[in-house]
View 1 (cartoon, rainbow, N blue to C red):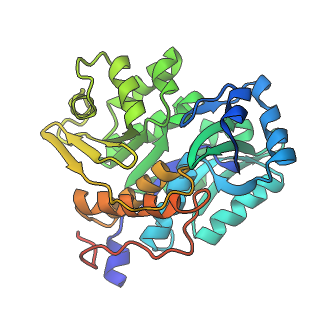
View 2: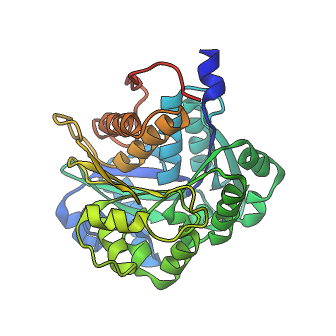
Length: 353
């Protein structure tokens, strides 16, 4: 067991820490706020009444959330090694911020929150219709994350100690400087830089797309789902329109460290997961028969399990299977919850060096 803990790589993450306010709603509720099923948007001023509406009329659950934080929590749970995962983000000095800190502590996740007085902790309305979710994020304090915090002593130490880095594409909306800071460190040190496509709008809005393109050549692993892959293909001008073709084309795009091939991982819900490198495409079946309660956090949980496998030196196949397992655990519960479930058991016990 000592050998296993010493061999496991550390993961450092930056994200938008949000408290999920989750409730079952109907299609009329989505229509009321102009939200599409299975989509994610950033709230504008006109959208903010959704939170009062949920609290007053839908008896919501309050769950620690934020895409990257969900992934970090699952990776820490599955890796089960103290200090394996560290997460940075910005929260307010308020009760929601305390809830996030308490939830992270309970999960064993190491957090480096930038706490501020001038903005409230971010929230995300999670609207669940027959198990499918739509997200409306009010970033608030999360939107005020600063490069000065990324460059602070505690965060710098965490970055130096890690061998893998993960940042969701959502962070492109406010902290490109921090993303590039981590990308350049990872490249200089020969480490592993990972980003998530996160949502189709990041490929549709010119400033966000430009930021993604700037980071792209530093990315060793890119993760997304089929709808994000479709928009990625359009944005990058690929001739391919099928998921496998898009993934392969994305893997072949120019890269700073050409000696380290890029991997592109595309999930497709209950359909197979696609893993592409410049050498070709592999397809991994998703286990059937999983009871669906709430798909919120499924993709985040897949990433947490998948990264946990990579952190422990497992094969791509074993890591994908771990991701499928952790996603299955989460969709059987409301929100990104898993504490009552068993951890995935890899075919071999010890980490590979």
